Image (cartoon, rainbow, N blue to C red; front, side, top):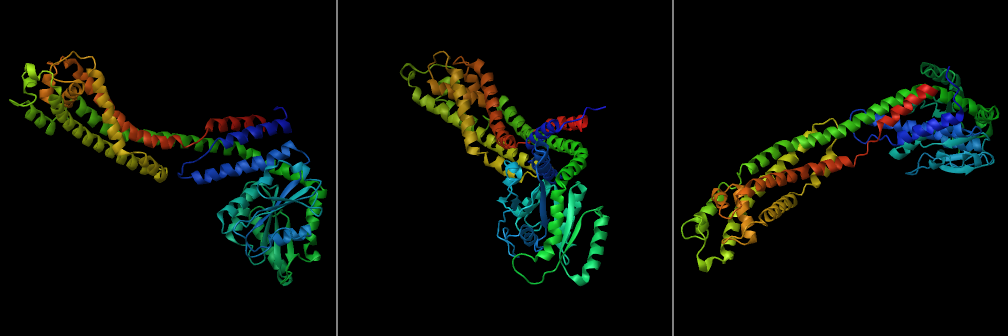
Length: 517
């Protein structure tokens, strides 16, 4: 037999569950994610605003929320029950409508720090019902999305939802779907049918009771408020008396405790299933983020292979670089002595400027070929990632745009080539003194040879650098790969900003409910 779980132990478990839910986000837009994200927010509201406060404070009053469609007369009923016009009652609503939370002075201290107070404006009134927090919520069908969202959050926070509708609108689809959903989630619900013509009272009651019975709400309290006709301000006392007496009976009979017991019993058996479903959703999103990262790397694979293969095989010196070399190495030209391995004449031996300039021209042609090849590789990688991401089940338009914005082609190319040039200077820094080139000319010769200019490769032996050819090509290959990787990194940086959370925590919490509840 399981040991009895105390309210304190259950409150601790709910607190840990709230923490796990706060850390378990579903930021990716993919099939089913919106519904699951809504389920997460709904569960958080129920636990944090409804269940946990009651577990912490036994004498907490019951939260009763008046909800329904626009024009149903919620605010008028709310004001009339309280005997004062505190909540604006009008067909025309302000753009943003703040919920009014009415509390008796004796209950106000108990509500200090309650999460409900973050949702609306607290009004402490002597005419409020002791033992009940009465809330006037925004319209379920408000034209403002924020109002609709707030209305649903208040319903999730309620111990009882009083569904307010009218004789002419009680079949409205939006409100009815919400009523059906509330019943499915085990919420205690009552129905107030407002503005009921006396001549149609019996017929409307019978029809509404039949509708409620189909939802399994045949035992839900049903109150009818007669039509007061054209009027301003509060409803006549005789019309509002039945609703006031019903709420009074709830407060005087301490029904708040019964309400929380009922909602707890209805909620906890399904809570473990909800937590596991959310854990699976969080893990799916985490896997989707990793899949997008893998797709980015895969898109870069072919451009990297092409660039590095060309680098290791010296294919960037073909064409214009080789032609440039031949013009400088022909008989009588600036690099003619180097081409045949003969030291320059005595008077020209230390005149490095012309020879440095000549070999730099050859090297510049190699760099131009590198620049074109790398640019093409960057474009191919960028387009490949865009295509791969847009084919995914995740809605990636925003991520593609942000990833692409970080790919600055000219910057990547310039910095990649600059890095390789520094590599060449380091490779030639310890070379023996030679009669042909200065420091930069020697580095240009090695670069030209690494690029694949055959004459420059042969000339390396004359300057005792033949052993540097392989490393120079390897470094070029690495630098080109790093350049393409920067494209991948730009997209992966976008993914790094997506905070999915931890599905494992949810699974642990689910197992705890299995053990204790």
